[in-house]
Length: 549
Ligand code: GLU
Image 1 (tube, rainbow, N blue to C red):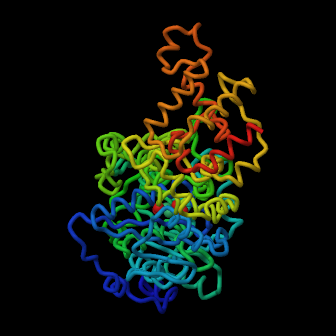
Image 2 (spheres, rainbow, N blue to C red):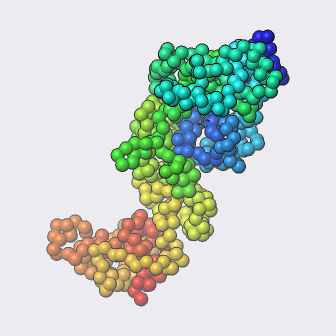
Image 3 (cartoon, helix red, strand yellow):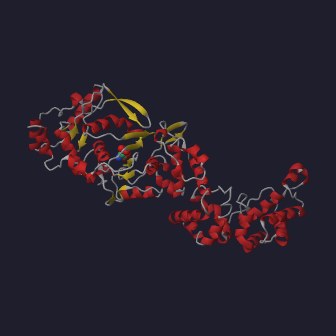
């Protein structure tokens, strides 16, 4: 009896691997095209680090006319949740990212290199396991849980590395006959990889981001097929990356320690290794210490958080690109209006040390991104957000024409307004422009320098009677406020009050503030002239009259 016979005994029906090699031929892509993948478990949860991976992978595959695929790694079925795949696809798609190939939902997929869900690939893994058995690079292991536990205890007591390797690998050297006999006797078993590595020897690996790294060789005989017949992650991903013709594995560096094992698996399977690109995960600073953003502790770890907050997808992606590539920021400064797609991403410039996630910076990026939106884009995106998360805002936005006028204030010029960082701020930023909302709000107004009630009434009354004409152009409008200031004993120019502060109770700016607060309830707003134009004569008059009465 030989390896071949043992392989046939274990997997009598598995196809030869040549079948799959032909079924999934090398891709016919342009030179330099990157094929890469996002390979989550179907937990439904997408971590901000996962989104960063998608932003970068999508950008690079677009840049090189490559392929970006979604592979679902569901070999650990305990982690699966209902609709987990659909939730992942939707969460990523909320950020404007679509996959070229892969799962679309729990059951459907697109692309010629599938199935894209590992639980549907059992026959493929069997074929490659059979191949390893034939080569003497895999073997059935009959260790019981008790045996393994005992082994671990001995290793711990002796203070040596735990695991199934070298002399500890009890079933590694079983003869083919002995193994076959046990199988025929019905003894339960799993399949292990037979490592040829030596922990005392080193291998050198070249990582596209980290450069050369020396590792001890792998010597663990890891499980490749579990008792449930499904493969383990390490083995499955090697087979999949090969058959899906992945050229680059771009993933967070929590996987870098698995490299010796992955390289040995690729080699034993006769596969060419993809290029590995391990980047540092996004960090968070807390009490002066850096740590990974944690799913358990940090709400911002979940991508759904950004969507719920209404931070535009474009801003989140742009910020992640910022974290992803150190030269993005200077490119953005030089090309403030270019679409992000024009940025040439350089994998080797990704972070090795880990960038700190900075919400203030993200919101700053977001303000910039929104400032470049047209009023129509702002309207559509905030309405879409409101429909999901804020009924009150949705109601405000009913009147499209009027809302567009509001969003048009201080926009489309060379210095557009930058007061909105997320859609959840829109209601507060515009609600005072709607009469229904404005008149029903109960808040007291806080005036600034001029805050005497009678004085305020005098200013408003005089303004309404003598100086208010909705048809005025901006210059005339402002000249009239100056006239009003002068008539009531205020400095008509700010600089006059600056030169002789004791002479004036206030200046034209203070008078404008009275008008601003009375019309909007706020001391800071976008351009008051534009606001009054949008409100219109009737609303302005009503707002002033309310204070007068
Ligand atoms: N399924 C692994 C994960 O959940 C994929 C790791 C990889 O990209 O190779 O992160």
